[in-house]
Length: 160
Image (cartoon, rainbow, N blue to C red; front, side, top):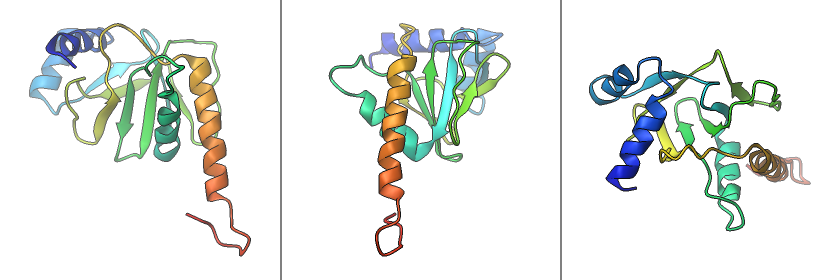
């Protein structure tokens, strides 16, 4: 990413904070993360890391647009997909969490990782987010693949 993209990404992401200047200071001078409220500019669907990494890989198909901002929390072993806010959507699934209005998400700045948080796809400032349909499809496909990989072998042992 170019410096202009980083700058736009910082401005876009910080706009979700109650005080964007304080948010940027926390990124630059504090512990490197800021708590931002979901539901205004974006929601976050968080899934177990293995599922999320496989789904993100599926979203990089040439026939699909470039994936939206995606964050990994290596301590919690979760991947978060940023998508348009929708107070009426109901994301359900084993291990799935949906952060929307009233939920807070810890995020590092787009230009570096902080603690256990790292952008797999940083926000570029254009406002592009994951489209719910392709994300849901990728999560279902990834879940199916993992179910096959994790199924017991004929001798009764798991392959993983």
